[in-house]
Length: 252
Image (cartoon, rainbow, N blue to C red):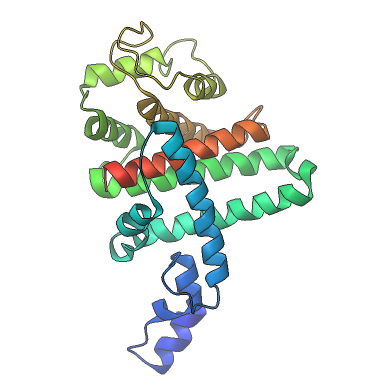
């Protein structure tokens, strides 16, 4: 893509490198079948569609790839850096999946655990920066608060602190991040107005937002995620994509 920029502009100051295959792939442009790299674009689009199906089943939503496309992918002028970074992460994930198909034991080692956490953290960072475009918040803490306020209309500083305390974020003997992740992933999908675990109504979409908060901090301060097996990694990936769809559908 950089070569396209350099050579194209050198030959023609009005040259638009966005019309060439490299950028059309990097921006996941699904509307240009004549693109030489279009088969790769379609493959990645199918990966996204698979996560959309899981998201709709999990939260009883009716989100579609067309919504994903119209509110995010095609908004290249507004979300250029987040879009390019997302496609970059999606490409890495696709490479990982291909390796796992042929070499199942390839990721059962310390270096694999490091790369898994790095991918999770990078995805959280992408979500954080995408959300910041709308919230204006400069920290993951601020973004999480604003997201809860915008999505669930239950916002107060006290409520947020209580939610964090109930999930043992700031207690003397906190749960490990792995404990928090398992707690959230296994929490019942129904609303619990009388559940004594929390003093506010909590649903799984709200907890999914808190999960990103925990994972972002875990990745920022560690280089390895203990006991992150393939099954748990896939569940976390589901939640990361779910959070992306929540942000696109409800916030952007």
